[in-house]
Length: 65
Image (tube, helix red, strand yellow):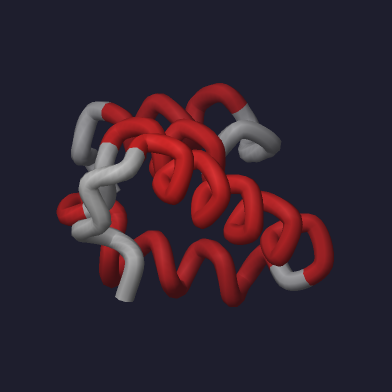
């Protein structure tokens, strides 16, 4: 719902919440990202994948998922 918001602070906040949720339920985060990462703003994506292993982060950033 907030993916298309024009405020960068909203992108950061949503990415932060996704990252925190991924700490508890990594499979849920991976499923969500698999469906939405290609349409997410870069800031939101970077925050969301911050704790993933480096190779997995690069896959998301380069669109190889």
